[in-house]
Length: 283
Image (cartoon, rainbow, N blue to C red; front, top):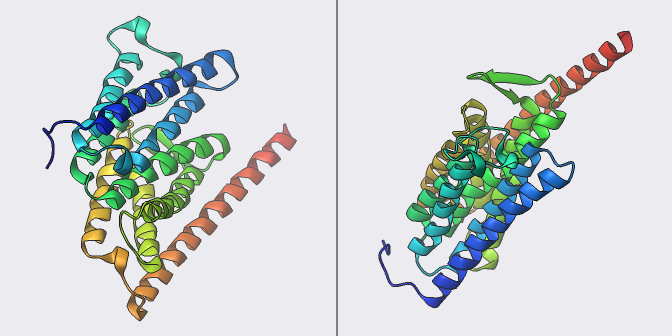
C-alpha cells in the first residue's frame, strides 16, 4: 500500500484543486440558502451531490492514495466545525442546521476509508460510493417532498417508501454509470451481464441499509456494505461474467424484484395521495 510516498506534481496540484473546489461548493450551498428560497435541507443535499462525484476522477487525478485521502479528511474536519454540534457556535452554518447532525461528517470519513482500501480498484471504489451520492441523496429529496404518508420509522427517524424506491432505482443507474466511466477511462473491463448483476444486487442492498440505518449513519453503512458486496462480486469475477442460462435466470429474478417493489410502492403512494385529496375535499 503506497501510503507514505513522495507526492508527484499531479498529486499536489489536484489536492489543492479538490480542496478549494469542495470549499467553494460548501460556500455556494450556504449562499443559496441565505440568499434564495433553497431550504437548508436542499442546500445540504446540493453539497452532498456535488462533492461526491469527486470519486469518479480519483484514478486520473491522483498517483498516490495518501494525497487523494487528504481532501476528504479536511472536509470531515471542516464539516464538524460548521455543523450544529460544532464546539464553536459562530462557525455553525445554516445550510447544515437541518438533517442528521453528524451525517455530513460521516460522508467524507466513509470516502476516506474507501480511498484507503480500494484506491487500486476503481470499479469497487466508484460503485461503493456513487450509489450513496446519488441514491441516498435523491432518495432523501424525493422522499421528503413527495412521500406523502407512505412512511415507516426506524429509531424515531421517519423514512418514505417512495424515498427507498428512489434509493433503489437511482442506485442501479449510478452503479451502471460507474461502469461507464471506468470503461471510458479504460481502467477495467467488464461485460454487460456482469454490470447488470452487480448493479441489481447492490442497489436493493443499499435501499435496505439506508432504510434501516438511523442517525445519519447510513453515510457509513451504505458505503461499507456496498463496498464489501462490490469487492466480493468483483473478486468472483462477476464483472467479466459471460452469458449463460444460470446468470440470465438470476438477472431476471433481480429485475422482477425491482418491478414488484416498484408496483407495491407506487400503489401505496397512489392510495395515500387519493386519501389526502379526499381529506381536503371533506374539509
